[in-house]
Length: 119
Image (cartoon, rainbow, N blue to C red; front, side, top):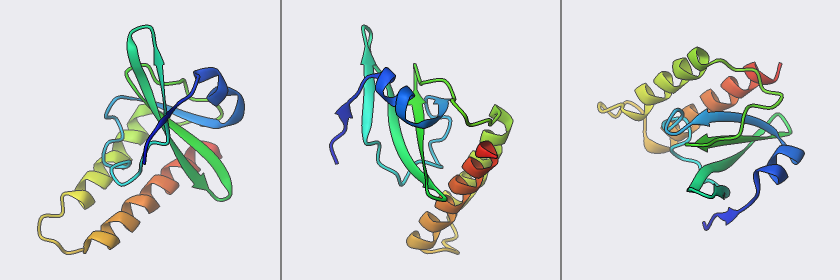
């Protein structure tokens, strides 16, 4: 899937946003594809991932110059807690779960995390 370039202004005006730093949610987003990105004078700024949370579209902005969170209230400690849970699932070297079950489990964690922030 190819990403398309969008302005940060377009994203800010149209979506709930969770902004995170580069690689902050790498395991939670490992099986997702960014649909768009933004760039500035210094090049690539951030990628955008679209996630449906109970019928609401949420954008996760991750990168060196990610958008600030808008209408999603999550602190870094909570994000790291869920990222660690996703890492433990992803790095299940004993293969207690097959690939599809790992993907579903991580998706469930991501939705649970975002639900905490939307409340």
